[in-house]
Length: 252
Image 1 (spheres, rainbow, N blue to C red):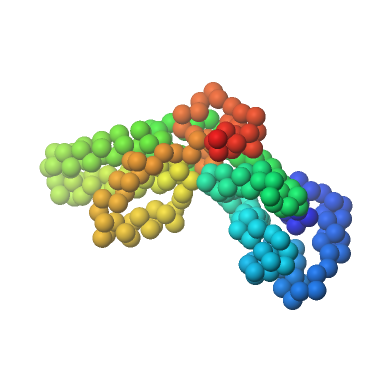
Image 2: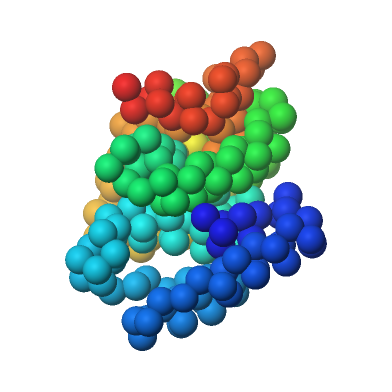
């Protein structure tokens, strides 16, 4: 918990010094602890041994590793390190689990609060129109993506044939490819993914040509993510009741 708060940007210098003193005062005779504490202060905490956490400390190692991974992402990438919705749901379940220690649950609460502030910063913006194909850093809903793909696949070959010249025909085809890539990237943003996933899809599509069609099936994130608010959320509260209340509703 002290490590999470130490790296939280809303903490001032005096509070950060106090938290640093708290972290350095904690002692543990086991060999892994000093390296862990040093990494925690740097924002790159290593994972303690699973057996040590489970048997010696009585800590759920999977929940502990989840908190460490989220912390490292937030420290390293800022708003780009906000966890995906699937991870946020896991964090909420871990935070609400009474079997976990209070320190770990408070740490998850602090991580969720940090993530909420970053998501609300994105939530202040209105959804980007599906026709704004040039805004590659935004989200595109599943329905709009399907129509854009079908329209591009059907229209581009016809326009290329009607152009009458090979040069202009090739230019039209290249433009169509660019439009498809842009729509695919925006669709990936809607499910919390980005350029790395686009590159993976591009490589795998060489062997599985119909793999990108899977994007027709995946629903988008129901909450704001690092790329903005849901495409169909115009005029709605980004996180009604706060992030934790929204996650609890999704968790059922």
